[in-house]
Length: 257
Ligand SMILES: CC(=O)[C@@H](O)[C@H](O)COP(=O)(O)O
Figure 1 (cartoon, rainbow, N blue to C red):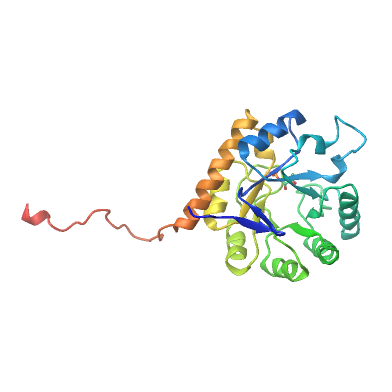
Figure 2: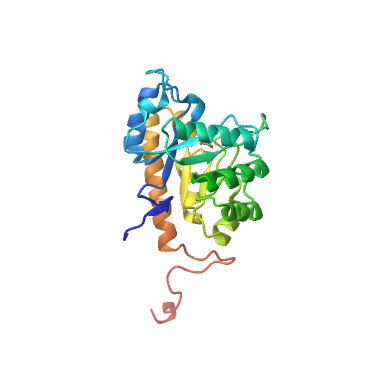
């Protein structure tokens, strides 16, 4: 494959697997997960960054060469998300921000309207804004117009490992928006990550499926392989789906044998 890099916020990314840093049995696993997955972008909940604590501060476990993508998890409206984003920047977490605005505690579905408001404010302040959203074409266009650097539609509710349940809606976004589409949340298996990449997603973000695997480090590598395979298949161009059978070898010539 020729050079195939994803550019977000002016940064060239070779890996299209983004990972989360929550739910691991031990934080000391995180550097190994980063290493085996090859991930360059790591998201961290700002409320888990405690600069005063060596053991509890998540930043101590994320290799310095990674692109840090703090997220606003815990925010219930735009105002809280903006406050958390500014705090992250002041704490030295850089200028990337994954906006996560959630007030629904049962399904943890994002509030697209509040997310858009936060996107508008933070993009104007110079943040590289990646809004986590329910897949909706019109809303994604508004996020783009507001200055989002990428949009992150969910595959299924966070932490469910249910897979790419939103496939048709995500496909519409991929086809219609000229902005990186990062499928985030709910991806439960490497094959589902490959499915998203075959569809044309720019990247996938996975946390629970890796953190909850029997062997998280091996699962991280399995996801990396699947994301690469899916991307390669997308670039190769998958064959047409047909309604009727078509023989794989010519059926002519039998009568002359
Ligand atoms: C870590 C993070 O940002 C999650 O909120 C994210 O959406 C990933 O979801 P899964 O845990 O379902 O992979």
